[in-house]
Image 1 (tube, rainbow, N blue to C red):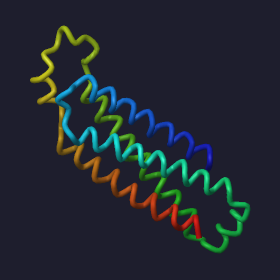
Image 2 (image 1 turned 45 degrees about the vertical axis):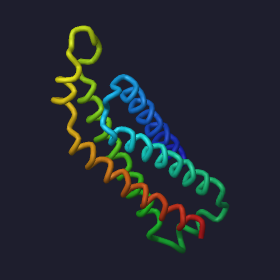
Image 3 (image 1 turned 90 degrees about the vertical axis):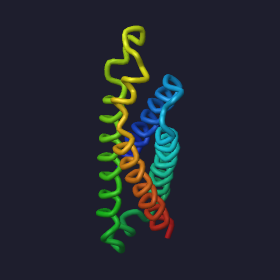
Amino acid sequence: MARSMAQLTGTCLTTVKRLYDLREKYKDAPVVIVAISSESTVISASLAQIQSLLLQRHDFAEIWKSHTELPMVLDQAITGVIVIFSLLDVEIQRITAGASDPSRIRWRPRLRMLWNESQLNDLLSSIRGQQTSMTLLIQLLQM
């Protein structure tokens, strides 16, 4: 489980880097890109915290036995993050499609067409929901 947490943390950080590059490339990027980047950084830190808590607990097997819902909750939280970041990756790819040769594309009209702020706002909302679940999970693991 710790390995999958580390991989997921890496995925989050890669997404943050891609969003940062996107913001740098397009100075007129929507504010939602900055918000998603910020929330993704927090999710990454939360995943690292959960991983640390899981590795530090010597009574891990006992916790699983006494709190039978915890493995399912952890699995669902991780699955939720995986799904959301997969959708976010698809959206980033869609936004940056065809951007390899900037001299041949007029960016402002193309970006207006490509950016689906509604979809990005939905993803931001989902990321914030996942962050809330990560916070609650951290609290459960600290009990």
